[in-house]
Length: 129
Image (cartoon, rainbow, N blue to C red; front, side, top):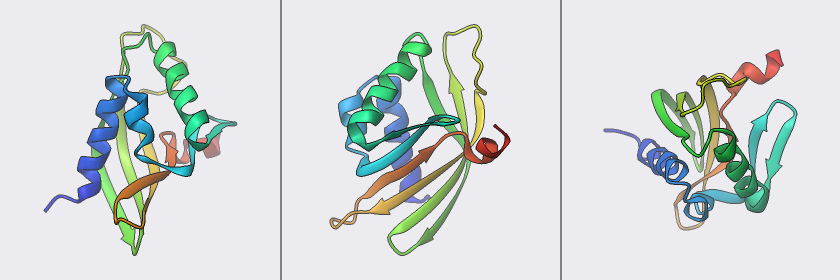
């Protein structure tokens, strides 16, 4: 049986592709962080939404994230997701890798719904920067 977080992450990817950032923010904790790039972190939903708008613009509004292989490590109300994140966009050159080994941390809220607390599409690559 497929872990429910895989479907959840697909919904997040679809919201990014459709540039539906209001819906996307429903999938984050209030105090979530997004690693925008090495040395730049967006904190909280407002900053994360602004970051996604800027990221989308950087990729000429054609960003399409998908997930490849995924490992989910769950302990109580917390889950670590290690995922091959693949980015496609109609952009000729990018200084950022389009094939990443992402790490995400999810927490369950009081209603038992998963929310993203840490969104790090760069994974351990941050160590090399």
